[in-house]
Image (cartoon, rainbow over all chains, first blue to last red; front, top):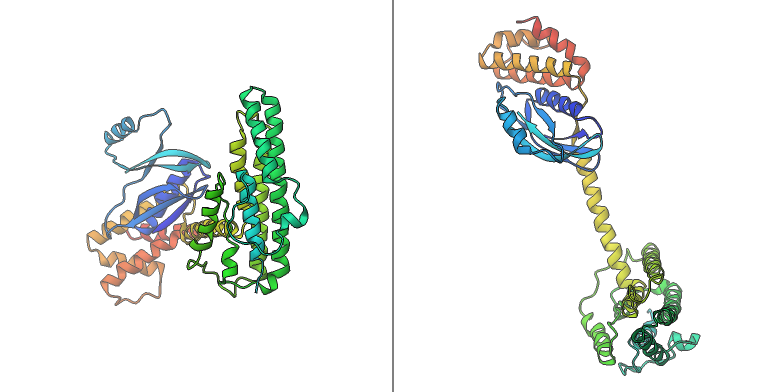
Length: 100
Length: 306
């Protein structure tokens, strides 16, 4: 399922929009990247009936920050990196990592 | 039949001579007076050559201020000639557009290109290439399309391209001869000449059409995508709880409870609905929460059948 998210919204709102869509459609996010400003393009893939979809967590990665350290931190909580891309957050191009 | 070709030879030839500073190349016999001769050119290749020599001497002597003056004199004079030729060309196009025929030798001849113009031989070679290289490689222009609209588009494009190059030249003339030497100015003058050709206009229009098509495709892609609705965390928690409950029932093959929930949501559901269809229909009910106003109904139905 190809979808788009309003990149003019804060990251937390984009996260809830995607999480809602995942549960609604029984599909999980596999790709998230910026589209024509300020839209972000999301690709959701259907999961088999009966399979639970863990919550998606979106984290903004500041320029000076290390994605590696963020990944390590999230791994410690049992979450795995599913994407790391430039997306629009409040209409500003921002590096964002997605974990599940 | 569009009979402008002899003037095009004259145009290309005269400009080649002017910008190369050489004596007139013996390319082909030109029939009739060219536009420059008719209008009365005041700046010919001989004069330009003298000015260029003077410019070079001034630069060598370190008299950059006067060298700049000489550069500007040369540039402005050549610009004037290019302008005169272009205006004559555009007038000719307009006068003959009703009889404009595509896919003819005459059309090919309008594909003027600027020569690099550093010598008579090269000018001859370039123009010969123009004559022979374009034969057999006609532009595929739809005759039906090439009408009033396309003529206007071409002229508009030529004017726009020329304005752009002219503006660039004017801006650069504010620089001294170190930062904008005569040689660079001559390159820009060739670009100015090119900008006033149908060939260049067609290339520009094609590029714009390509960019527009790409932009259109991106817009179409965007339109085809589902826009995700905003949701509160509470709504996310509600839909997750519903989906988790569905999954539990599905994994436990608890069709009975699923059927009860479905019946509560859709009273028209038949009691003997096949098992596979129960799960499909219940899933479809959950997806109705795309309209979040349906969420409370779903929550009640699932909660009532724990």
